Length: 332
Image 1 (cartoon, rainbow, N blue to C red):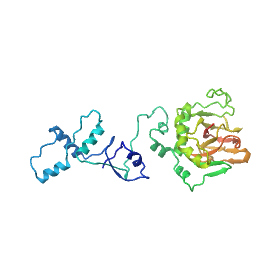
Image 2: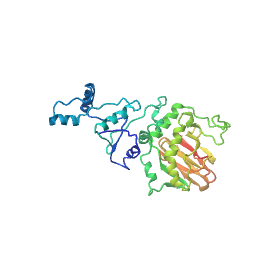
Image 3: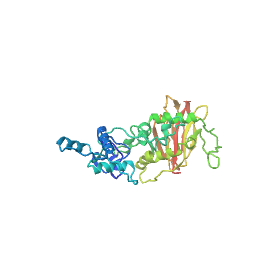
Image 4: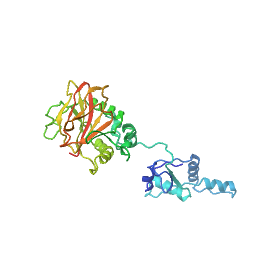
């Protein structure tokens, strides 16, 4: 059996196990392969003995040995790397290479770009190791949002609610930011912004402060945009743009609530990061025009609502504990 990455059009098909399971004959393999050790050792021995050992008898045993143990001569062609030379040698000896995705034996992890200076370094692996990132940080029911027969909950007019990230993500992002510790003071003066002024200030940390801005923009494209396109039919913007991605901390002794305001966005993402009635009491979001409040927010679930004109809203007071929410103003 061969387990491999394939430099051909077959690769893009074969990695989608659910869509296209099968076995393919391929001309070239690279990176990882599993070979019977005795076969390879026999080939190396043959090379050391001037290649192609002369068969002294024509016995059926010797013929069988030569059929099963051909000599693998790596070409000295400088234009071929070791993988290409190895594959060519196999083909020249009548040994065919096969790829199968019928079984899962694990996968390779790209560690070249792995950072080690954050509290939770795996948070930053959404590009390099997206499969592992999804298993750890995407909500187990996220994919149901995209099913054609799934109706996204709508607690208030044009305000939708859906699961997107796991409790592990919520825990890790809170711990990452508390470890960073540089929360804004909640005043209108904010040197992080162009012009240095915030009209509706919160106590928050921006994602560019902790090196998570580009990762989060990728998250918006991969996991928020598909749900948005389902909810708000006819609105497409790929990739989504967001200049403001931040986590807000509400605390009774700091900033317990937020005054009524419009968001600077086409639509806003508001993800609940911790547990109502356990980690905090009170809180929630009230949409004033509709006199409709969303309280007891579910951990890892996101509210999505229009930003300007219609959805004037306020943050309801937190009376005990600390409440954290992740906010993105998308397509300002």
